[in-house]
Amino acid sequence: MSVTKRIIIPAFIFLLVFSIVSRVFFRDFQNGWEAYQNKDYKTASKLWLPLAEKGDTRAQFFLGFMNDMGFGVAENDKEAVKWYRLAAEQGNSRAQLFLGFMYDLGSGIQEDNREAAKWYKLAAEKGYEKAKTEIYNLAKENVPEALEVLIGDAENGVIEAQKSR
Image (tube, rainbow, N blue to C red; front, side, top):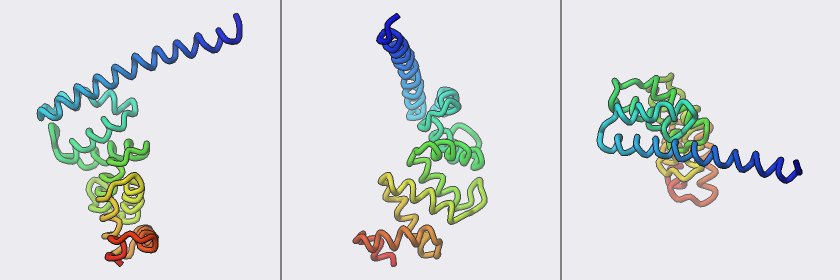
């Protein structure tokens, strides 16, 4: 068998399998989203749980949010933190913001303003303005990581940061 065939055939098989699996994941997430929008939280949770367990950050975030808000389940801040963290550690910016909220408020986890600032900063770097506002609020409480962001933004001409100093 030529080198080309040894490379092309496995690559083609991989792409075919990946394409099929991706469509199944997309379909299950989309069906979960439709259930969620229709306030059928139990169905959404049932569809998203396998995806979340396989690492889908969207499903992880929404399972966290549903536990946080008590949508379809009893409100469970510890479970919310678990799902937010899994998604946040994979770079999901919305989960980073919400994990920051949980640390900031001490919901489901011990209050830790430095950890809150860390997660807010990551979310802010991806464009979440609310995360910047929360960082500036923590800076007013003299949280070192938040002060660092505030001072840097103020020096770079960010008006909101300059007003917060």
